[in-house]
Image (cartoon, rainbow, N blue to C red):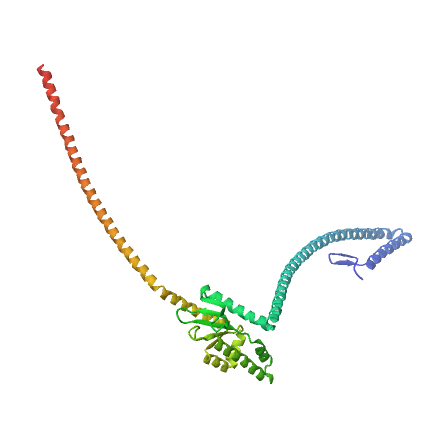
Length: 377
């Protein structure tokens, strides 16, 4: 059974308290019995026993009151301790909740930013998908595909050459119409450029990878490119009018790389027909070289103008040298005149000093004559 009262190591249960009270009551009854039977000898003993019981009762009451006070103090201390612990726990819980809210807010902010990025990326993907779809629709039509390749070639030429160095959709003396002419300086002739985009045969060749149809698709691609080479060589290579080399512009780097990787006979055919096959990248490098040639030719054509200007500049320098010499002569003459003027001023200054010293010397003689006249009178 749990102790009802605990003080200084002494623990009392409810049963022990009841037994103690019963013993006290029994002692009181025995004392009364002894008092009735023997009034003489046992009176003193009874009084003594009653005094001891009263003293024990007093001590028990003191202990009970002390135990009550200690219990109240412990209850107060326990309450204060619980209040402090509850306050600390509440503070920690509040801090934890605040930190959790801050982390959740930061995570939500990052989540919103990432969702915004994903949204923008999705819009870009949708835009790109639409552009790719449009490009596929454009390239699926042969006429549109040809216009696309021609426009790409024109943009490259306009970015690399001055406006007077090329012509678009020019007509040659044999009534053939060429996509572009590059005007080389001097009597080198114009370079004819024709844009072709053999996409169907190339697409069949790439889609028939490692299949029996790939060989036939490769032969079709070679046939189409060879036909374009022969057409350019027959139409745009005119002796005395155009340059001895023409160009076949392929708007696709993939087709150009495929020809060099798997169809070297086509490249050899183009060299033999004096038709240079170029892709957008190689076409840029070729135009860069042509621009350097044009600049060099322009410098050579303007050499006589430069020589004339240098001769005139030399005459101007000689005239300037003569004028500087004359100016130096005038300057030297001015220096000599200034020197002579200073000599004259020095002479004048010396004569003035002499005159001043002469007057100062004659002043005492005048005073002596005056004094002599005064004494004679």
